Amino acid sequence: MIKNDIKSTFGGSMRLTAFLRLICVGTVMLVPGLAAAELQWNFKPANTEIGVAVHDLHSLVMWIIVLIAIVVFGAMFYAIVKHRKSAGHQAHQFHENTTIEIVWTVVPVFILVGMAFPATKALLELRDSSAPDMTIKATGYQWKWGYDYLDEGISFYSTLSTPREQIEGDTEKGENYLLEVDNPVVVPVGKKVRILTTANDVLHAWYVPELTVKQDAIPGFIRDTWFRAEKTGTFRGQCAELCGKEHGFMPIVVNVVSEDEYKIWVAEQKSRVAARN
Image (tube, rainbow, N blue to C red; front, top):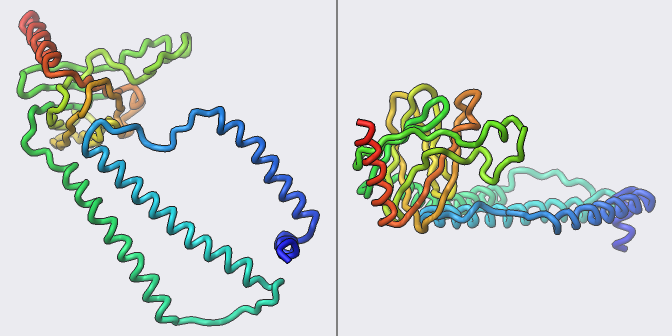
């Protein structure tokens, strides 16, 4: 019975055989590739508490979407298979089913309201840059970043340090190709860092995914965002707005260090400023 239904669906045994062969060949070709590849299905692990909350929210919404897709497509394919013309079913004409219209209006409302609560909570936390432990002004230029540590009186430019030979393809590309700079941002671990963003020429964006930071840098305006790194390490990002021909060549590197290492770095930077003056 089931075999006959499948044959009637695909239009005969020859089409069915070809279809099954296609599935088998596709599976044989796909599985080894998947097994050999290093797959990363999700975002990089966040280094901030709010980043973990955003990641959990993303996963929650994704599973809701998967559940909705299973229900909708399951009902659709069931109707297609069980109510096809070849099985003897006749088309029915119906409209204005009040019960169905109420259900498919009320259920999505409850789903959206349920997702709105955690999303609003995470969004408010993302925008709360009050009471920072330190403040850094990040200015976008074509095509580099300028940083001013407003509490420490330290200023410097941060430009791409990838060798030109790698960019031109004359030598093998390094591990951090186009994601390395001469002067990285240095911040202490566990401190709330407020970032003030602006731009000198065109629209830029300060974006470091693992620190859950993405803020546009707009000429003539000061925007702010913040992060608090939970562990030490080096975290890399890039300008996330199309700012011109060198857009891909203005990376962002943040070194998160211990409190003692940060104090040593600040002292070194201040001594360099004093030596130039």
